[in-house]
Length: 165
Image 1 (cartoon, helix red, strand yellow):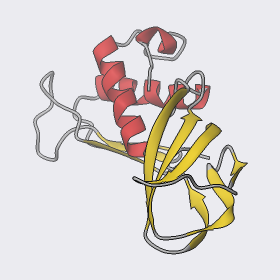
Image 2 (image 1 turned 180 degrees about the horizontal axis):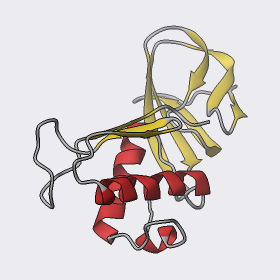
Image 3 (image 1 turned 135 degrees about the vertical axis):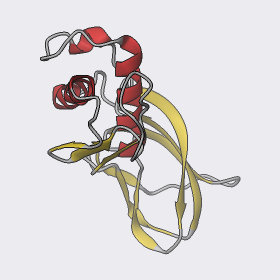
């Protein structure tokens, strides 16, 4: 996710160190489990362990699906993208296996509500270096390992977040 310190300039606590903003944004995206922004074209693999009536893509904002293939094999046809926000391919029976999907996904810019959460995480960590956890809405974070001393050497430990649709 591309977030610059300047993107957070209007939020309380700004300015933020660019390296801090990049680290927080990267952690949010990694633990959300999908590419947020900017929009990009890529090929992803989806492994399906059972027969299904729909193939759910590991993204929450898909603007186009250009091709679907069996991994290492032929093209899959007859599907349709039924929901950009749900990122689901429907219309055929999906058999167990690995699929390669050429798609375009991600918002053009990071949504404002997520920018606010990133700024809040930056403020909380900077304001209280003893902070071990934080939560707001569907987001939660542990900012350093349990038992790690506070101070400038404190490192990010983990972020978790429910999928935001």
